[in-house]
Length: 255
Image (cartoon, rainbow, N blue to C red):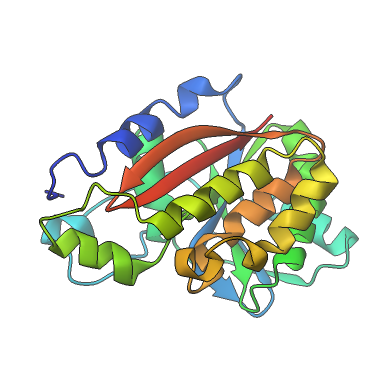
């Protein structure tokens, strides 16, 4: 879309365009957790050919014509469900759900050929951070099976503040002080050399400076918890440091 300023998303676009090239090998499939799917118990997308789920409104007409024809993978969905069951994590498979925009927007930029199977995993509606770390831990074996585990969210997601910056011609490039404090804390927590301490910090994320300013509701943060839980002993590192509408946005990689 056209943005004001025009370069609002340029850094993130460049990051996503180079994302797959930075991987050591091409994944056999992708398991992705988006901030736009919540269920009372975990659901695993098992649709072999997911459609587009345009879960937004008020955008230009062309944004409702986007296509991301990546195949699903019922086989991966079954493997994910088995791992969750082995760890006593309640789950069901969802055969009809399509890709929401937390999946198809970033992946359209990162892999426009849509040539890797993609399976989406829901979050839990209760937003329990420890539970989402545990979900990630249960799924860690997938990494040795060639599966890329992605978390799609935002490290700062206070839309009231971000939209006010978007509507104001002044100050949109100035970082919100509270947002910067939380981003610094989050980067330090993710890069803690002790994985147990990292996970403890992420579980207690509400104790971070200005945590609820950054995330009035945590659905865009907890995909990170799933990925961190799956990281094992790998230490997180920052791979993107951006500012969008006055808010820092970071990306992290494990392994």
